[in-house]
Image (cartoon, rainbow, N blue to C red; front, side, top):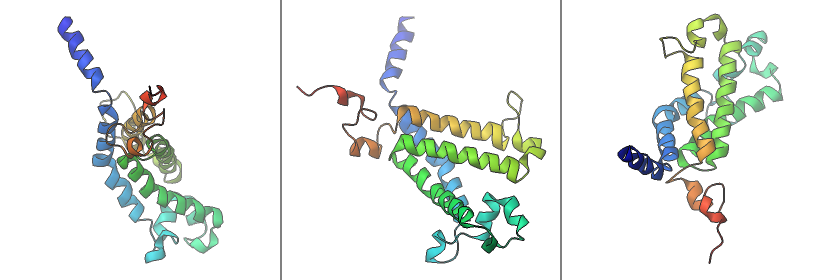
Length: 190
């Protein structure tokens, strides 16, 4: 029992590594996924970040775009703003998570993004009609896109919401004295 307690105490000392490891896993598994998806939403040319592609509208507002005969000019300012914000978020939020910049806020933003993405897949793209897409928990298959994969993505991000960016995060360099990032900052300096 003594050896187990020593082992547990050693693990507790490296607990800050959890957040850094979570950011590494996010970078290794999801960064390129989100950036590749974001690239499909960019319009042509340098100003493509302000004039999303037809595919961007099709991914985010599939039913509304179909209702207007795939003519994006018939969609309003609201649709444009959501598509542009979603496209930018697909680049900026993952980058912030990987760099450990405003980590908690970026991770919360990613959780919101993944939630909206999942709801769009289920209701906008008809994923509810395909049980293999929606999936089920506590079944022998671990590869459904919504319940299995995205639950793990969100759990990974929850670790970052709770723990912050961990070691090697820009948060640590920029906000060295912030109590939420550096718990020892609350202690007065002698």
